Image 1: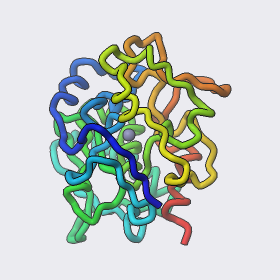
Image 2: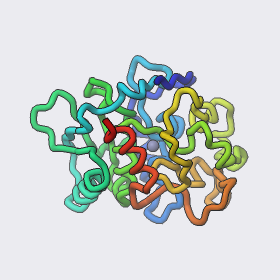
Image 3: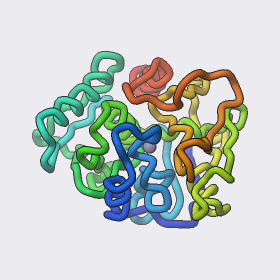
Length: 261
Ligand SMILES: [Zn+2]
């Protein structure tokens, strides 16, 4: 299966403008998630695309890590607390799925986890090229809550955002007039709030979940913290997304992606 979308901008490089924005505008008590701050720099806010691609091309089955095992190398200066947060993010996968994050020794393919001042981001899935196996978690912002490393690791495992699912228009409406004025263009919408075509996405018959760790907040890209951009069409209490990491729908998806032979 293939996801092919034309995106009008290229999203190939980490950008310090994202880190600056995060450090200036994001606080621990924000209703938004820190990975929402890369709009216009990263695809959908926190996804990097391989250099030769100007469109999103994901070969669904090929994009899986072999043996459900992801070797990782931590670079950069994470504090002891942040390392514990990272470990507990990985432990969520270990206790609820067959996926294993293992410390890098001499494996050919591995992810690098860094904390540079370029925001929170990841590539999507396995690429057989370590250039495209980078996860960045700018400290301290991307490490305040365990949900953020869980989210970025799930991109690395091959998942996209919940709100780009083919059936999302049955579940949410998007109020474009609540976006920041500079985001109110068709191009921005196309690059960040596009609906992935149903014949190119695997949803594994799992119901849409407002509380998925892969869902953005109601206020992603919003001009005001009082005017949500994403509005639920069906009953839902509380915020979208997850500060606490994997929800049952995410666990079911990871198991469907990796744990059924
Ligand atoms: Zn994301």
